[in-house]
Image (cartoon, rainbow, N blue to C red):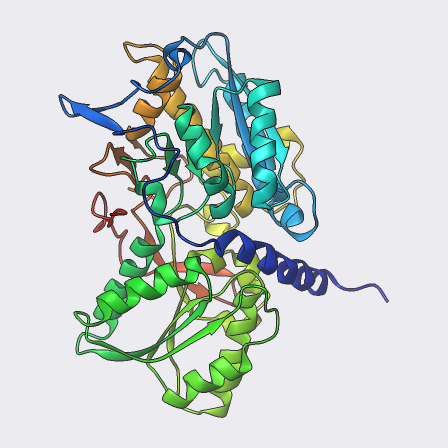
Length: 452
């Protein structure tokens, strides 16, 4: 019998959880490394300039005519490819839009995507192919922590910009040792701090909490930050449970343990299909424990309304963060920027029933890359690899699909994280939309803890 779309999607996301775990379970290396290009850079008159003294001469060669952008994404290999296909579509659509509308005056953008199947062992040969056969000038929007780490040393050694790594790993803030690598997503430690801020507002006299996280460096980043901040926030962590990244079974025993402590708050850090599975287990535990209604904070990796819809009513009321507009929310249907985005996607050939929220992530990478290139091209040095990374690290921009008031900023070694202004939101399962909680949180702009 043919399976329904939701059933097939659960299977898809279960497999994706395994792939995501592989991408998030790398062991953290030191903030240094053999591939770093020395002292990073200097601030001259308040403006960061990357150190090119150890770079090959071509780092300062003018780029003319066409800017060649490379990236790696899972284009085959099952679940990851299907899940991330809209990201590639959004990026391709923006490049087409940028060329049509002369977004980078005097230049055409050329995009080449190589398939690494979400497997970091395949990322290195994919990047080498883009360098040797395509001659890319920069990389942008590569998906996955371990995938980006796999080539960070080599790209920094050769002074090739590695922009907008699609991951929130705090290691992207190590400007001193890896000046040529920047991140795109909110750092995981910043995200946790924003949740703690909201917990303090909701429970000013203190509260009890439980932690549920995937057993990987990804999960440990949240756990470490939560433990660090809990004391000052008067949060008593009464239980801490983990799940292996490749485990697709419902976390029944972990949730049963948490429910036995009846905490007021749960901070959940699952992956992929573990997100709805965890929420359904909590719903079962709540039904078995009348009166227990914990406030659940679940990470932005689970924030896709498509993913939360799989949990049904069990996802109702969860709290998370977003930095962009929900392009699928009916209230944004007439927003001029959303209309423009959807029209460009249609022109590109995107189907009307496609996953626009995921595609918007690729669109955002394209837009940010184009704006960095535009800024670099207008610099006194013109468009070079060095001026590209200088522009990325001296950046202040409001993306068209970002939340009102949100600025994406970087400032050399002082502020190495692009995305630190987030909106806390609460999910409504019946409408499959979010409601804002308070105003945009800008507390951590330029203040995120950097690797030591």
